[in-house]
Image 1 (cartoon, rainbow, N blue to C red):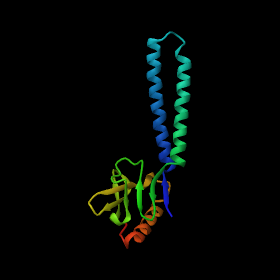
Image 2 (image 1 turned 30 degrees about the vertical axis):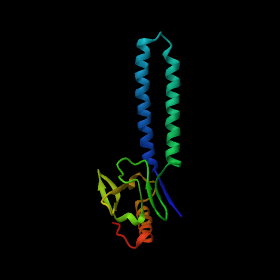
Image 3 (image 1 turned 30 degrees about the horizontal axis):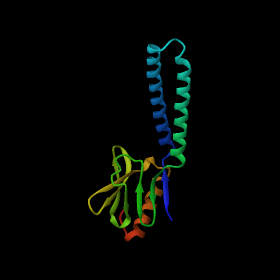
Image 4 (image 1 turned 90 degrees about the horizontal axis):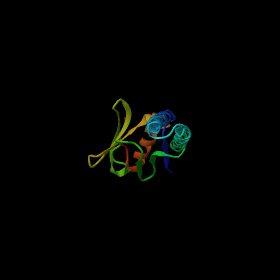
Length: 153
């Protein structure tokens, strides 16, 4: 049986906010360019359509991220991390994991999976739509099942 972890709602809201700001910047640039290079009145409808399309895209992206995008997946054989910039190793088998520990990276609470070959995977637990304690407990049990006791914490 696998475990799947998605982005937390506050993180998705921040991403949507960034998307709305980007849409606003693009609209502003296009309005300025339109005002300079097009006849009067031709800019209005285009701006309205662009704003509507940008906001629709932001809402659709938020829905996909909140409901469908799996960030971390655990199964019987290993783990996979997606959509996390700077996570390190994206996937590995449990037998490759040397140990797991918690750390603060850039002010964010993280779980760091250190692999036997010296590489690592860093998962910021604040991005996940679960309590960090539940995530660590699931990880601990997966590591124990994968190849005996491994320290987390």
